Length: 373
Image (cartoon, rainbow, N blue to C red; front, side, top):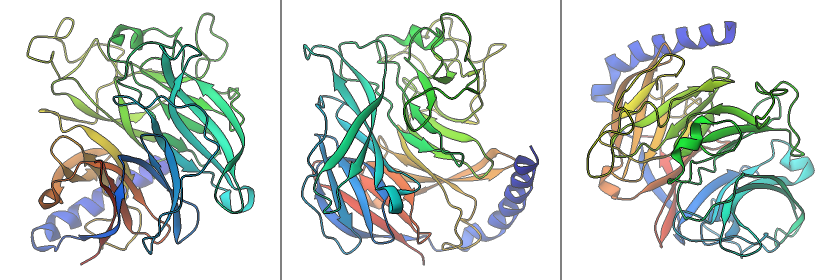
């Protein structure tokens, strides 16, 4: 709590400074580091000059900041790449330099190939960076279903070494986001060996999946650990009602009972209500939908005091990078950046150099770096 209060105070002070300076501030400009990536989805640094990049069709590569793209790394498990599914997020372990371990999430088919779900695996990257060794599936979303939408699949490692994974509601099964005997529309928290932490909020409750951290979600494709010590996520709404949430353990975030969105083509979802007792309100919502994917806090001073403490969100639908100014844990204002690129912003990361790196989602996707002005 003390850490959160300190963060609230610093955010408030930063926002006051931002209000005074933002009007005349020059915005960072994108430098293209790599072109020709096929629907890149996730990125994670393994040292100061190299990073892992996943491509949705089922390839994982090492890419350098000098623009070199390595060959597809071998050893991935079977991946079903269709629709929104495929090889999605990737995350290097916080101790990668000593253990060479990484985590990746993907669409895992069943034995027949007709059903699938989101899975999380760990592996060790070989010294020559050409193959994965010791591949272990840590978690498989249950149940497996037919379909090619709403897989979620962002991975975050918390400072205490736990893994968080976002999971979609699989589109046609949104009501299951409110029940706790499945993994649909949930965030799960795991130990690095795939076991369930003893302090998870639902451990010991009969008929409940003990991995669950929070529920009532639709399709979360952005996640980041906040300087306030909590997991923050962005979530696709239906037609309207995209959300930014700060996730607390054992809380219900409402989907599909409450939402600021509506049915595709119009009409209420359920009772058409936006609030209900026992269900958490989003910190911020976007209507019309901007299709958020990718989320990162700017904690470095590389972009000056206006940007420090901001939250960056990639927009797929409207093709921009949103910079959210925060005050007291709430969104004060939104600034739309990089609209001139006309690119779907899929992933957003702050690198070890304190600079911001982006992936654009297209058949000829790019790795970009924001250059301070």
